[in-house]
Image (cartoon, rainbow, N blue to C red; front, side, top):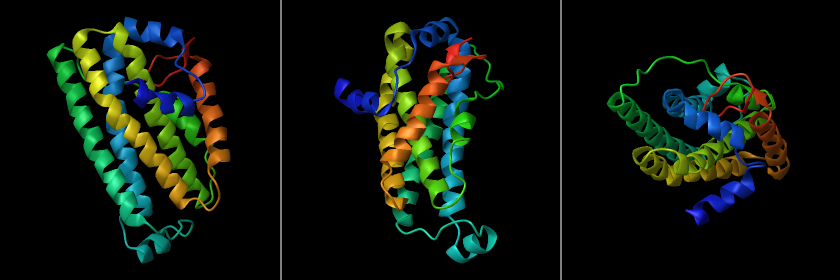
Length: 219
């Protein structure tokens, strides 16, 4: 596990704060509900990326979205994101089953500021907008992986095994997003990785009014 997590710890600009970990362990039901929502949103995000940039003919894409770039390497993008969608939906079903076994009702909870805060930093023009969204996807997946590992020593055996089972796929998802960002970028992505990484760390380490899977320090 250490070999799997080492590149993720290097990629992220900060570890999960202890204050978040303490609050999360104290409210496992809320964390499971939001985790369930996150898995579904991750699948939906990948579907939206495929539809916006890949899953319709280029002529229709350009006619309906003049700002969208003509992409090369589309097949690889579909392959990676389609696998991600399948895995995230499977994880959604797994979390839902754990919740049902524990008598936790799956209901709506408000979204955290995390994804919205990151997307606010994305550039607006193409292809830079796509590159930033892919880098943001990498940070979300990497943070998820890091938090699963951080939670494992503090939760019950069933949840610890489940979180451990998610680590490899989440680590691959972050790598796939980064690889796609490099593929579609016209310039080296390292500067944008640093900018968005600092923004991600600021959201994780600053006071946050609500507890969610990707929230910051509890206010």
